[in-house]
Image (cartoon, rainbow, N blue to C red; front, side, top):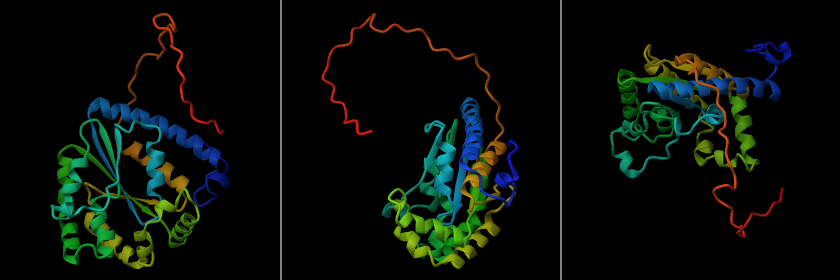
Length: 270
């Protein structure tokens, strides 16, 4: 990372200003493109899991991670509430079809860990099912790795004060109000219950083969940069060298003459 003033960059100091953030993010986006090309070239299978409390910054991080790469290679999976049929299936069954094939990076915006978090805290599964999940998921993830999947798990840790600030901001902002679901409101006063669920989840599933990486996310910009940097450092890749790209010469109006047509252009309000 380039040198900047301490007031902008030092740990525990002020937040990144927009100019600095955009500069560093642009560098990381360039590296993500290199990673994308390498994953496709080598047929790698990468699975990235994002978990954390409501308002921890998962959505913004995923947007920053994917906004300059191909959605055909970087696929985002954010599953809705399970259907009645899915509720009758083996728990992991609805997630497995979304796992990466060769040349793909799949990003889970919440994952099978719903069972260890929201389902457990909000009573959508029994305590026995939640405990059984925690017992079997390490073996499940070991099977993922043995199949060739590179698994990265991120927990975004937000403070109660910052969570309140972010959830409150969603109420009056028409761009964000959709993020404030009825479930967010119901779970808001269950901070301690979610803390206990997180602690038990880490104790059971923070394994040597599939460890959790924890991210301080009160500073959203810093968290996004740190996560993308960590992903780039966790998957080995090389830049694929190619020749200089040049646009070919083209001739317009030589082989076909454009016809006059009353195109219906949209109103230009801006």
